[in-house]
Amino acid sequence: EDGRGQFLSLLSSSKNDHSTAVPSSCFALSTDKEYAFDEGVVVPRSFQFYLAVACGLPIVDISFLESHSKKKRLGGMNHQHYPFPSIDKKKMAEEEKATHVIGASNHNWYAPQKATSAAIERHSLWTSGEGIHASSDTLLPGTDLLQNYSVILLGDFDQPSVSKRVAKKKAKSAETTSDGSCTKGNITVLLQLCGANVYDVTAMAAPKHIKKGLSKTQLT
Image (cartoon, rainbow, N blue to C red; front, top):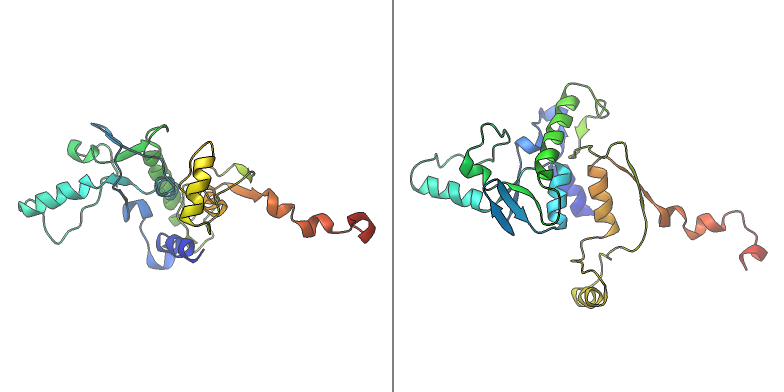
């Protein structure tokens, strides 16, 4: 819980600091390439990928840094400047475009690019005093792509405190494997970053709510 709060705080914008849009000052780095095309890289589906998309961060493959490091060694780039992936597709060089993550396997492509554009637009509205976040002094990361949606959480989720050994046994016995990252807290954070209203049925139907107003006879 503390880790989530620190992460969101790090990517938040403050009007007092005249912050730039998060996608213009931060990017996510992937080290797990599954497919590579001229248009970009496809990575395995993971919570980290979805978290970066939900925050609207540009995602690049590790080869992006490797190519820039090579240019620095050859004297083709100032050593005092850190590389940053271009967001503007028109200005994006072909060699840089090939290092951008455009999606995850078995998923729609260009979700990261769509999320980045939405996050920048969201930040622009906020700095102009417009939109649903206009009155907030601090803007949390996000895209608001699910702003008009309400999501009810149902079913089973991964348990954050389960040991790796127990999780491995559960994964073997389950029809679909899980890496343990699909906890209720993680799913809630992803949905909220996308602007959705999230409702937890189990919390709403807790025993204390069910028992409220019932007599001892009715409860027994």
